[in-house]
Image 1 (cartoon, rainbow, N blue to C red):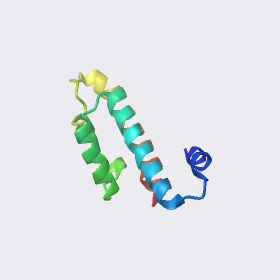
Image 2: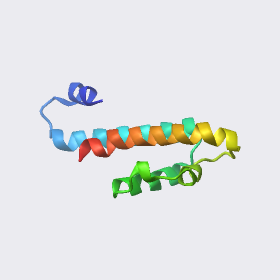
Image 3: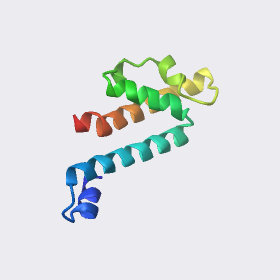
Image 4: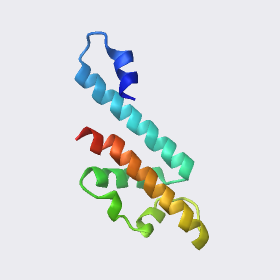
Length: 102
């Protein structure tokens, strides 16, 4: 991701502002893909990510917190596979777009 930015934008312009814009666009794109692939409510996902940006730890999220993000009903069996996958993707997202820039 960083390499793409550098390659596309090293033309003498204000790199700090461009980099911030680039990261924000990538963050929005990834959030949209995440919501689509996992069938999540995009508004609730954005709220959760905002909470994570303000100090909520992904590791402290309960399965019920994650289940509230989904738009489809889950059985007990599917919860055991879907929710851990969502938690891992959310953790990866936070590591990339939140922890990686603080």
